[in-house]
Image (cartoon, rainbow, N blue to C red; front, side, top):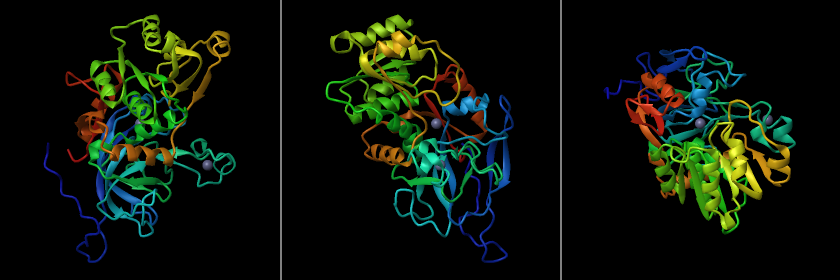
Length: 393
Ligand SMILES: [Zn+2]
Ligand SMILES: [Zn+2]
């Protein structure tokens, strides 16, 4: 670890007297899909009167970041500074800002978490008529170049500072930075799981033991699932999923065929008919058919693992949907309500949230982190779960 670099203190008068010094900081810029990350120094814009500037403490590296590296979100513009799972402290507070997005009072120095989804401001058809803001026609995201009129460097979490425009949400948090770092995937998990209303005695199968899968296990248990089965690999991820609430873990390195895995899930369910609900958290198209096969007739299939385009899969509408009488549901993004509920779960201290992050790396190693996510989840010879980037390292 290098010693922390000297940075101007918030609001410190400069030598000319009275006016706050301009902040400068570093950002890891990706030039193009499959390109290179370069750490660039830049001046942070003045704080927006209705916004804040955050000094980054940790940003989670997400599977979606690996997909953005591969250019899989067709409407995204490059160069870009990615990173949408961001926790840090308030470095500069805009004069109009008194509270976070849930009404908690805030001051400079408070630890906050960014709610990355940006919306139109309540005027589009989905926001104003249908009341479905996650489908907002003007939606953008922090870490996805949300502000076209601003320089790119501080619009993502893989940087020393984050510049938030008025209207971008953030929550004050009462935990250490690493424990709250996975709040964004936990909010997704909360959105996903709350689409289903568990009745006593029900079984859920969770496909995938990555961060979303682990957190879906946690929220499913917290929300009333009686038995949670997780299907995934490697072992350390399954172990954490169990500590999060999974009752049964099926390792896909042992059960290597879909037929074996379907049989193992069925064996764990009432009458061996199959799970009441199956939640897809893999991002692998082929898992969809396998997941539907794990359901009992009349069950519910929730697809949560596809935030970018990973390709097609063949299904038989008669066998997989109609005769099986299933409910099939996609879940896009998440809303403030899911973030606030997720924050309550983390602040309860009941769950091993800190262990979701297995490795913490400096900004300069973002490229290595992305490579590990795209490959076999190994870094420096070690198995990884989720990597956090801490710019102070
Ligand atoms: Zn994410
Ligand atoms: Zn809208």
